Length: 520
Image 1 (cartoon, rainbow, N blue to C red):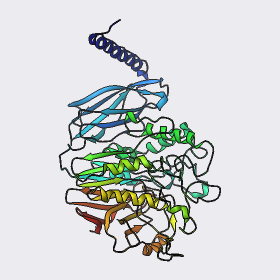
Image 2 (tube, rainbow, N blue to C red; image 1 turned 30 degrees about the vertical axis):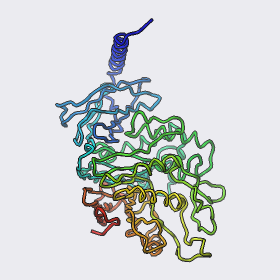
Image 3 (cartoon, one colour; image 1 turned 45 degrees about the vertical axis):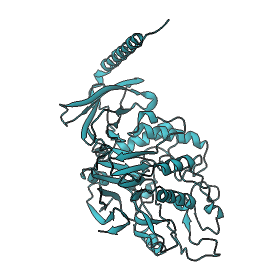
Image 4 (cartoon, one colour; image 1 turned 90 degrees about the vertical axis):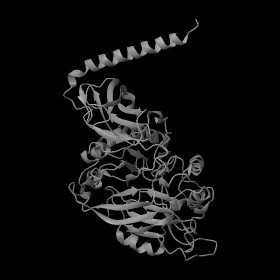
């Protein structure tokens, strides 16, 4: 039987009609549960492009069928009198009834409001925006944040950030922590739920649900679009590629469960749904001609850490003398494919290159690097989980930025639970080596860090670090335009107080064409 284009068109119309009928029947069948809040984890948006954005929510509550039709609306006004786009998506039980809507055909550089309806329940309203058009020079107001361990404090930082009227949030990893409940002697302000470390898909789902139930976090998700990357605690502390810190069981099965739960709870594109233990998160986003944002993954593709502690995977603190493999030239933190992708994407046509990655890139030695046992063996002592554990990869990254004339490179990071502002060089041992990029590594939302005395003792060994302080919790806020990047280190008065005040601990400016941060 030969089928004409008209036949195909009629078939698609009939299929759409049938899907709509099924969706309507399911909606009517469960409408009696209209008094149940089906959107207790809030709403979120992310991945802003000039004409598109991703919307997210998750349907919860008793009596959910295998598939739940979820109606969504995007409006040009907060009262939803001017609808820009709408539709119905199916939230599937296999994916925790999460919804990922790739909304397209939007106008560049404008704010939108969105909401969801399912089973007689309506979600809260979220606000999002699209990126500017390719040639536009619009300014950018954004923040970076990371490391929000639930039982180390309250989320007052998110409450304050929601008042900042930002265009964008870059979340740089450790959205959840996999640890079990702390012992009673730890006197936590609130506890992780469960009986032990998170390992199964359902346990990861429950952990995300616990975190995302926080009202302050929900408010910030609803205030602006996010670009989200992960670090280690979304799976297991210090994991590297296919090996966990504890060397416990089938790690790739655990990683698959963790990656699925991450995707189910993030405003990530539907097309990026994970396949077993594989999920690509690295991507780039252009903010008009002002900035190119490169978001990378430093966990999934990295080489394992060298010289781990006996019987463990993960990190250690070593000297180059005692761990010669630290300097192996082939070692990679991003993986060869992602390294090439990043090198190929450095832009000389955008005003700024912003590298959103997970941890401190600047060299940080815990002892005097000038003290060498031999001229060809570097001095110092280094933590192997971060870029110091992959010095050749760091050199390749910075070298490729120089070779490709990456304009005004600013590296953004988190992970280390302290605020750092640093100059980045190709040779940290040479005081005359030129500064080629600027780094802002933000502290944690809540997660506890090292004692400030330890950091203060090491700072003299690292003169390229302009600011280094632990004991601060919060986020970094940035204002970017063609002429300069202005940074504010926003720090809570008391992370244990949900009503904590906030202050600006320090301010810095990076002028276009002049790498290196200057105290403002």
